[in-house]
Image (tube, rainbow, N blue to C red; front, side, top):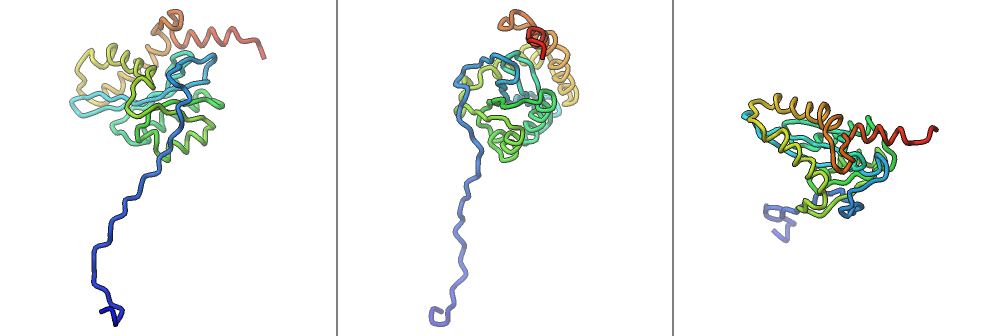
Length: 201
């Protein structure tokens, strides 16, 4: 076979290709404070079960006022879930140079999310793997939603829970729910006071 330039058929060795991940350094270092709106945002995903299956919610929170500036609710954990929440936040706030802090979940390290982040001119920031303290403000927000909404009843359908999440965020949490860290004001009221205190342009 060698003399005639022939070779036997054999299995090709499988070469594992490493997936390219977009990661950023931790620009927050657990210091969840901001002097003005849209300087620092945090983002994460939570999930809750219904009799039909899981419902997933991604949210983007402004650290200055604790206001949810973007959110997305779906029956899947694909990257589109977090991209949709980011897009809502971008359209609502039109940020410039804002830091967006997340964990290292696959949705946040995906090429699509990183591309949208750079396209928006936002600066990515990530905590360590599997460390809840590195995104403690978002964990606190999810804890409030868990106690005040998710665990208070049994959810039959995904649509029922999705509607309840929407109402809790937009009709209660942002405009009504008071925070001790905001002088017992709601996120909307706290931002309104900030805007009123700014000198006229």
